[in-house]
Length: 136
Image (cartoon, rainbow, N blue to C red; front, side, top):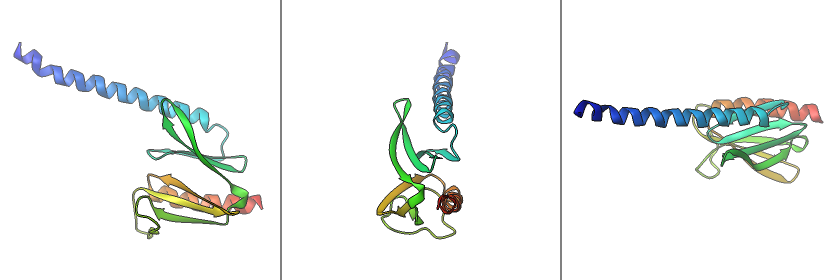
């Protein structure tokens, strides 16, 4: 009897992990549908983003769907800055890692796009600036 009770927490952990895995698989499937046809896309813990038809849009995953969080016309992009996610206007150094945000500036607009990984954000800066030059 006591040996059976010792296995009960393991069973509960297994059910919990299975449920979390199912939710993540669903989130990824919804992202693939949402980002279909995009030139550039990303999905991480901060949300999803896609570049589609010259419009950069980003969303957060809430209640089983992607809720729009913002957009920016890539034609108007003049400058992209890499900033710390939480500490105000502090720019990140080349060695910085972890969560950050891209500040998109252009056409009188300023928007922040969150990223969970600074290396990926740096790659996005290069790709976004190359695409904005192509749009001109």
